[in-house]
Length: 86
Image (tube, rainbow, N blue to C red):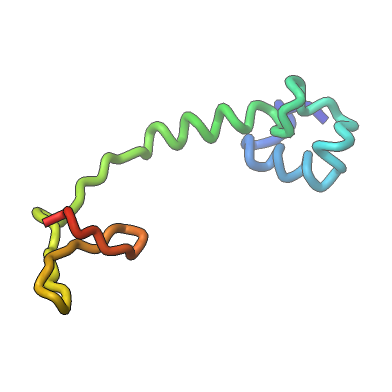
């Protein structure tokens, strides 16, 4: 089997994995030894770069909360209180 025998890089990768890859590359589909058949990694990078979009936050400002003693704080992405954020 050669890379040209497959209709897509995904089909080649599936065959590669089911036939023992990456431990045993019986058909020589992984020329660079990275565990990805027929430049599957390069294909994924090209697809990802075409579909990459930049996302903007929909929040225009952080939300301040008032604590039990009257101090203000924001909540970080990890759920912690940030008392210097307001």
